[in-house]
Image (cartoon, rainbow, N blue to C red; front, side):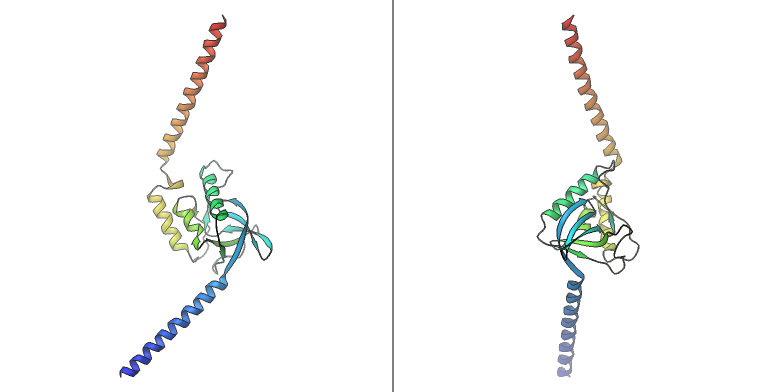
Length: 194
């Protein structure tokens, strides 16, 4: 009985090892190592793959655009560009549940920077939101959890609108005071002339 138990354990260990190797080979084959060509914005960049420049839209997220009134467009873009420029290794991963390209011809990929999912880092900080999920993508669950956490902690674009309103009011008051002081100085100069 002890021998058959040991044979069963050996078989189980062998199966686990084989499964692990197959999963590792499949995951490695699915990754495409690339070199940064240029950073476009918070959720788009150009990479060199097989000696060609390709435009990649980061799968399952949407960061505010640079030309929008949202200040997080610039923040997301700067964060993404810094992450990509300082990366030692950038890998793209396609998702079998997603299209290979969007309607504009951009490749749709998950982006790993030094082993970390860039989309997750953007969502965790509130620099991007989970969007354009037209299937059960590989990382949907962790991205949605990160979005909920960022929202509950009022991070990035999820800051309270009251805080944004206070910031705008303070900025208007400061501008008003500066303009008043400039006007007062001009008035004093005019009085000296008379």
